[in-house]
Image (tube, rainbow, N blue to C red):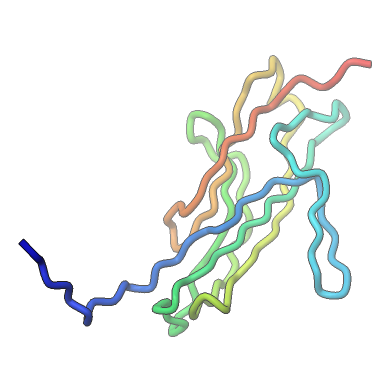
Length: 145
């Protein structure tokens, strides 16, 4: 049995978060962003808040419309879903694969948040109140020297 395909069908403008990266910091030079110290875990510094940045890139397919901006933000929660921190909201204009939106936001968590080690932070890329991507990062005890 052959089922004919309806060639008139198009998607509704799929949007994805194609990158969600944690780093120690970033710098911008001549319009180019460089992330340094990519993180797969966070070790509290032992002297106040531990800071890091989160980079998220949103891309739309060729059917994505730019009629209205979408609102993007980054959310940091603990393993129980309690919000630890969140970025401001950014306007995301996604009108096709050539026009992506990137956001970078800095965060700080109190050093005592990770006491005892083994805690997990969830980092989510949110677009229009929907989580498009998430990653978990483990908090480790600081190194003892």
